[in-house]
Image 1 (cartoon, one colour):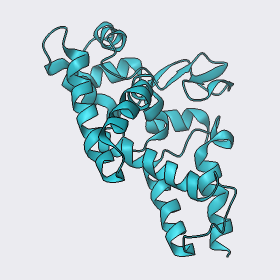
Image 2 (cartoon, one colour):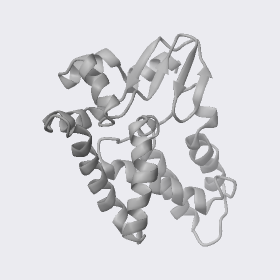
Image 3 (tube, helix red, strand yellow):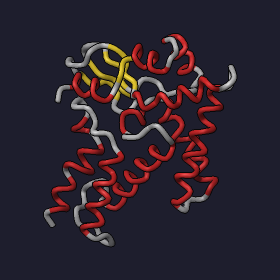
Image 4 (cartoon, one colour):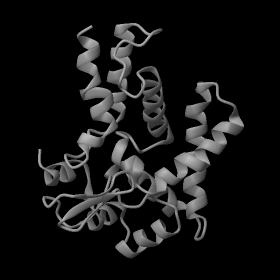
Length: 211
């Protein structure tokens, strides 16, 4: 799959995203500047593709433009229902509540969960990171599921280096890998070699399965 094919399969242009949301591109720009909705996940200039996760990667296949996940339209809809000036608060109230509910089952202290949400999750949400790496960025639950599965898999396998970790059966580890694969994006051809998916799924799963 080419990079252009990947972008056209999973993303839409800035213009198309605004059209799908029923707003102008200027209104979309305003919501982004307010910190109410995520920035474009990818920005391409014809010579490279750039993201908050991987920075700038030379990739001449990439058509110039900004690329958004259409799944993120939900956040625009929440912002647009809010009173003027309250767009950011409305979106982040919904997102943080959903993240709290999803993370409550981890057993982590509520205050620690709150700190993690505002220090880690919210910035990553707003800079477009979750559009790049999360299969379902429509809700806090989808985001938290992917992040928690990655944390667990990384911990258990020493970041993919250990195919026979102690304390977890082969079949359980294979299920964990498959659950993570389903919750994560496939990643673009430009960044796949550096991605967590390659390390924790494509490279690791065959080693575990062969045990």
